[in-house]
Length: 67
Image (cartoon, rainbow, N blue to C red):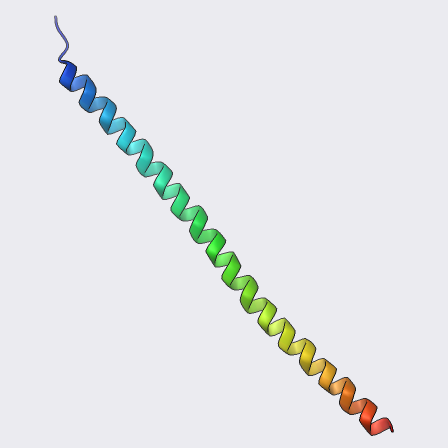
């Protein structure tokens, strides 16, 4: 009994395509996760800087009152 070489080739191509789809999906999830973390860190840095500036202004105002 002879096995059709085209069937073997198509099976190999299908398995490679499935594997590459999995890799692409995983890469998208990882990149999406890193982009999300980056955006969250930017937002947190912005709000933290605003709070630090607010605190410094309060300290400055208290020091001016003390004079």
